[in-house]
Image (cartoon, rainbow, N blue to C red; front, side, top):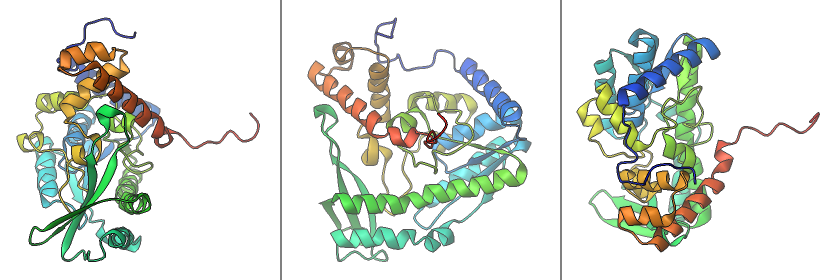
Length: 330
């Protein structure tokens, strides 16, 4: 066992948020100014909680005059994202730019490749008449089964259709959609290199460890200041740093598909406050019995959940790997 204190529902909470913030900004200054030798930071801002906290930390670490926020909407983006991102930048006195990436994505045939796969499942699908999303409906978290992804199309009149998504179509839709994150990262590096700044990554602990990021997309950055923080802890920092209330109260979404979709619906399959507690117990060596007793669950279900977590971590290891280069001279 790796732990020394009893498992509780509040075990995930940071006891001294101010101290954590000070440690992060001190390390951020050292990493960017001394190790990477850059003059400031560029942050992609979406109106979401993670990017908002990263912008606030970066502004506190470097001063707002050495931070640039980049909004990167595309035609499927929720308009609220841009409104909230502007409010965030104004709150922290950071200059913000807007880069519409729709033309770039169209050049990659991002939308066409995605829609091609959707039409193989729903021949009647027309992007001018329907919105679409993919998500997990049949959760296998507590019985150690892999997720079953569904494709949902929603007509303009509200009519909704849903089918289990075949593997090939799932892979094509995800691959096409990943152009969005990779295009955004390319745009961030353009501005970072033009200013001799560092790119500040926004993934949190769950996104990193469970593989909820795009390799060389949002997973590619120079530093990741919240990469070791659970979502609950990110919200604690948001409150402390003064992130706008509208952002704190907003439900976390993927903002990837044309239909509205929460992160829980697409990937995590659990509310973040529960996921945080279960993952903490899993990675810190608590037994399924210890966690089950506190969380009002059965030992068998938590044991299955932990096996599911282990499988998820192993199957997404590729995403966290650096390029393999030891082919000669080892």
